[in-house]
Image (tube, rainbow, N blue to C red; front, side, top):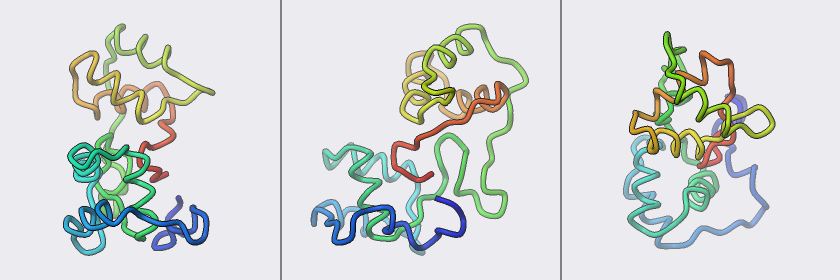
Length: 144
């Protein structure tokens, strides 16, 4: 969603879309100033047994902003994103990224999986993608 869509996230979903009451309460318990961090959304999904997609959809329907993307791509105030292109990329990381591309893009889920496989921070995968001029899309939470 673009900045113009802020506070209208629910419009991405069918009118009348419902949120599971337990998931709704978990999300509401963790929002601050109508914001929830990507990390907290991940934690809620894991602890409550929901997928990231279900959790993201619920956050949208509840019209809550997702902040502090764990890849550094959005939700960091005026600067929006904080990730910077990597100065160096290991051959293993470059191969992992390029082999995971779909339609020229790297999914958020694939970026997380690469970070886990190589045992590096998620933002380092994103920094490498930035240096390679590869967009990361779609977001597992549906944020962009």
